[in-house]
Image (cartoon, rainbow, N blue to C red; front, side):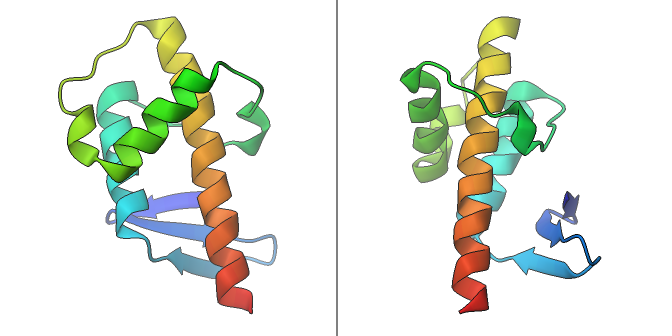
Length: 102
């Protein structure tokens, strides 16, 4: 489970261990996507194939946060952005947890 506490990303595993993900760019991505999408649902089960452009947009916002400032999307593209965000987010979370467990 993922929690956002005081703008910090906290991963809670099945044994109730809390691990803080220390990735400022990922935290900034979360904030920017929240501005664009409103409510954000963290759910790996949401991930499904979508058009590559949505993955590109999320990655662009991750690397260049200012890219999100004037962004606005209709509902269907927002749904696809949420899917792309979840994929990107969980890929980064898994990458961070693998790095921290070595």
